Length: 288
Length: 165
Image (tube, each protein chain N blue to C red):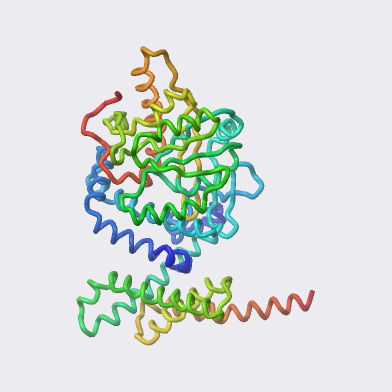
């Protein structure tokens, strides 16, 4: 399919993307239901049909980001990039020492990292969850290997419990670590946060790492603005430091800060939040 | 047309508002050399892509309905969209496959491959529209005819201009 995408005439792309979005929307019932439930939890005042239309929009945008990533991954320079929050971006580039870049499953996170990694003056280590299928994992691993450089590398959260130690060592060595803080996959330890007034499950790892290392956390979002156009939104950093007895409060405040940034972005760009599992746990007004 | 409103270099009109919205929301394109902006070398035009895609989609629908009308009668309309989607793959992948073979045989240089796929798919779609007499395919036929006439004319003008200079 990747081969087909790379060689498809550009003017046929919208037809292919539209058609396959409909196919996946109809076939992937559990993912569709999860999207609808998430959207209903985010926007309870909207009519039920709006969640269904919204779920299709998520699938449509996801298909576009995969298409763009395939073309760009094949060496085609077809994507416009713009940075929002240039002050914070400059601050991140000029900072020294380790730092955590906290991202969400939005836009083209796979593609932005190798494009911008060279501007940070130190290596950016992107951490990813492995694909569910072993064959798909081998395929993507091979493709991502081609994107690696002195400024950028990919690490997989494959279990075994040693990744945290490895990442803490990288931070101590002054490198950057990019993690995703919005989706709990496999046996990742969950934490609870609050989005749109509802309780959500988030991965605990990035926040525990920030506390253990004392490295600043830079929320960063990749947003698809339109046809082959993306925006990198860099937010002000926050730290998760505190005395030994304050760990619970520090963790709670850090998660709350991240949730506030994420919610602000999702309010405008909810249709490209590529989380295909139910994240809302049912409770309202959580925050621990 | 409200010429005072310009969107991604394209004047906004009621007709193109939706196409422009789908094609490139997000304001003005990035400028080269400006910090924080990184324009693509070969992004192309979103409006053009969506406009061509819409025309091609109509042509495919027309051909699919015409081809299914004989065995299915009025039911052909019910299966028009999936039928057109199947046709899209047949046309698209046939030319991509032919391009691959031609390139491996050394008959097609890699830079010409995209044009080869585009021209091949477009022409076969136009031919299918013409043979089936599908009214929905006529805008696409008109497009292909205009392109076929305009391209050599443009080349002639270019050569004349270069000689004049």
